[in-house]
Length: 164
Image 1 (cartoon, one colour):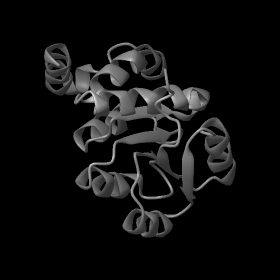
Image 2 (cartoon, rainbow, N blue to C red; image 1 turned 180 degrees about the vertical axis):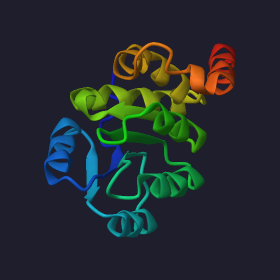
Image 3 (cartoon, rainbow, N blue to C red; image 1 turned 90 degrees about the vertical axis):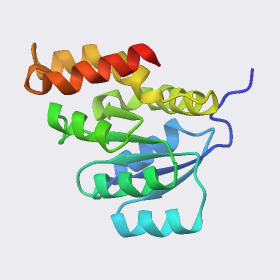
Image 4 (spheres, one colour; image 1 turned 90 degrees about the horizontal axis):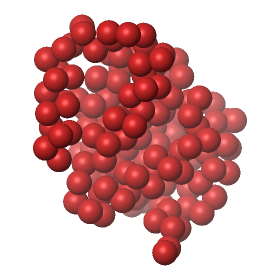
């Protein structure tokens, strides 16, 4: 079976050079373009087609980039360390992110990108499955009851996931 990542074109946007370098290495089987600013990312999006995007939230206006990638139907994974909060997780889902990945799970990024691309090929919305897989990590990071603040949102999210 062919690796779904093989020769896929991926845009990676982060303001930390070491993160960009690490992601390039981890996604070695892909064609990776990197940008360290919002403006550079917009320029790349204007002139290239991408199979997926990995966007940092802080430092590069990640949510503004997510708006652009969502509008042009590029599956997007939000990557964060500093913005790792329940509110940012919810906002990422609301804005159309296909995954929300803590930077301490960076080594697993090929798995998350593969899942996003597989779901897209199968006509599904990958976010439901990926967010569910990461739930134990969010529970550990955010503590028990973190979903209570936005109970209606999370209940609706679970219903959508169960029907998918």
